[in-house]
Image 1: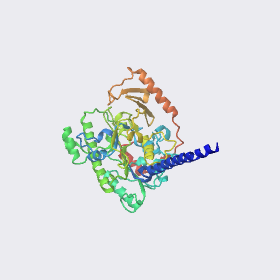
Image 2: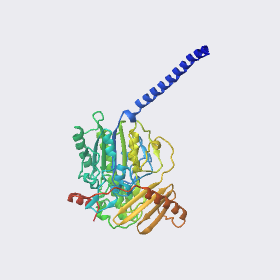
Image 3: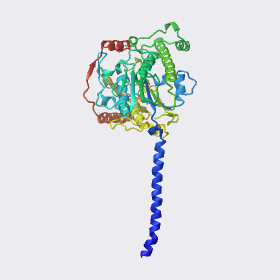
Image 4: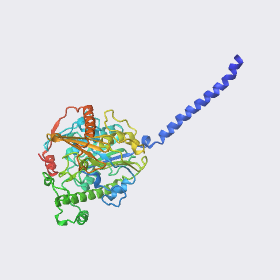
Length: 465
């Protein structure tokens, strides 16, 4: 018996040694994988560009022969482009609050327009995107050119440098940005060897007033058979109360002037790229918009009027050549997803309160069932809510009005299907009510009286009392 035990001991030792070697090898492999995972050890420069009032269809991001935005088309060839990206609301404040908190408008509570004199303040109880990046060691710089996003309204949370700029032209915004970079880094460039920069820029072009830009305004006038002399600057006050159709001369004039603004912005983004070299492999770039713009598709102009597709569909592209392969994603996504996606890409924890989802799996090619999207708008005493699920979209508007659209067959939302699809209405209505009931309520919010100069700027931008 003793002899048998002695014979087994070497075998046991050999087996133990083999198992130990396998464990050590596995640990070494994991360490090496982590060492070579750029998301963990080679932290990128992070640049978030948000553009005010930019419809998704105002850009040309595919090789389709269009030259609406040639620079962004070039950038998109190296990016993940989300073809069905949505804003949770149809005006700036709730949309941007959702982007920075990953909370639905009803949960962050910054939803009500109190005219140009006062505005709700984003609560400091939320952990914003900028705060998460600052905690991770980033130097955070914010440059919003919309008065609704001013420091005193809570949007500066987590930013080391925050400029309430009074300029609105993209060219002037770039100049202010270079000055901010000099202030932060003693050099108007982005260099990750000195610090880890997180840069957020919010451009106002192409928000009203629409300014005609040459030579693009002339090109549009020729295509639309419009007299170029009639294409002058369009003030926000001109849109108030206007009810037209898509073919009216007034509508064509607006579209041409708006398109020239978008083309001008594309040129300024090219200039920004050349100055800061945003197309480097170590730059994680996210570009999107807060909401779209109406051009009489439903007989109105501007935004914050409804929850139709032309107001909710926004561009969204994410570019990080070191990690992400260029691709196109058709699954519907939302601005609430930007925050958790960025955290996941950087290997940082996602706040537990986040209501968005990481899009990393989608960007890496995993198939995903279409996600249900929810939308909300409150202006004055009027409220809209909406839900999109698969091809169907349900909108509840003021006065108990209800509309149902089949987006697959009717992408421009022309035919209300409420009467002939009552079972779909019931299904979506139930989902919408369940989602609304499940949302956490916002904390108590303060309201800030805006400075007189900010009030005047908002009136110039088409906001009125």
